[in-house]
Image 1 (cartoon, rainbow, N blue to C red):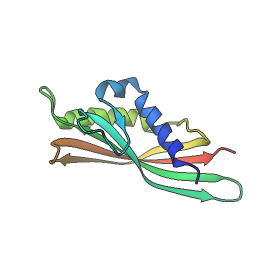
Image 2 (cartoon, helix red, strand yellow):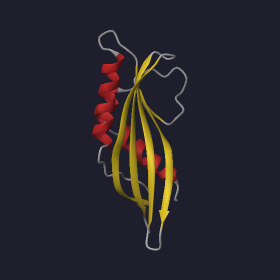
Image 3 (cartoon, rainbow, N blue to C red):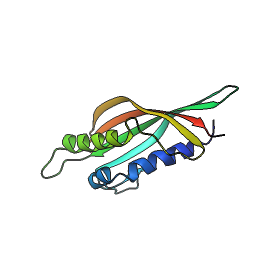
Amino acid sequence: MQNVNNIKKGIYAELNDDATLSALITGVYGIDVPDGTAMPYVTFFVVSAVGNDNFSNTIDNVIIQVDCYAQKSSTETAQDIAGQVSAAVANVLDDATLTITSYHSICCRRELTQEFYEPTIEAHRYLLDYRIMVNAAK
């Protein structure tokens, strides 16, 4: 498998460059969010990455987890805000053709959406899992 960091950079660029999503959140982060970061924000990380090498090509199969965090505001519930953010993420990534250095995008497909309440930080979290399949550029 080639460098999974290129895939993460491609996901970051897709999320960070979308004006609708950017208007809803304070930022897009990897797994480590800086202390004191205001919500709502989006995090993402690689859940699994498996290469499928054969004689003619290399197809990498990567699962990315995207988490949308939000706390209530004076006018909206955390659930409503997190729902808006997760809908914006889905609009960006569902069936997206990603631009990834050293790869050709095959598919970006959402496989799971879950909703949670995180009592320790008093926030709603929407979890979206995406399967990303890419073919290594030759």
